[in-house]
Length: 157
Ligand SMILES: Nc1ncnc2c1ncn2[C@@H]1O[C@H](COP(=O)(O)OP(=O)(O)OP(=O)(O)O)[C@@H](O)[C@H]1O
Ligand SMILES: [Mg+2]
Image (cartoon, rainbow, N blue to C red):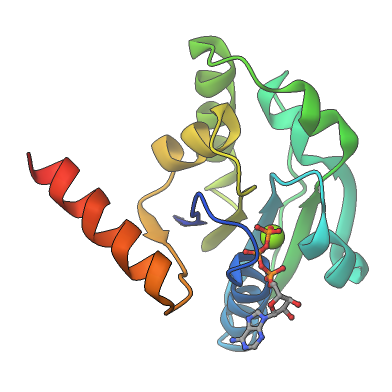
């Protein structure tokens, strides 16, 4: 399983919209898709409600989770909830539990699409550590372009 994280420390730039469309796209291409909503706003969860499995994504940080397996193409959603608001401290145990759950789920899925909140914190960090790909959507406006340049000059310094 490949895990793709949609992440950007910016609000309203299309993260959830893209994440949901990626889930539909991969399912239509015959993939077994695990959609994880780490944002308590839960917009992706609302749109993909028909595919919910009744497990909160917040549980992935707390305990070993038996994610229901999939035999054929489709989408399964572990939804966002208010419980995610309590997952804030950068704690190695939370990150490791999340990573371990993703690893276990990888036996039954082809792709995980992980939507994240716009405020960077332990949920985003855990997703980025567990994932192999990152998609960062941006607005092509002046402030966003300048911020990108500042980030790239900081990271290469
Ligand atoms: N490509 C696009 N063209 C036009 N409108 C878009 C596009 N992508 C997203 N939108 C609209 O922009 C708004 C914000 O999108 P979305 O909720 O996906 O952003 P987000 O980055 O997930 O926001 P948040 O940071 O609050 O989670 C929504 O109303 C959505 O319908
Ligand atoms: Mg969103």
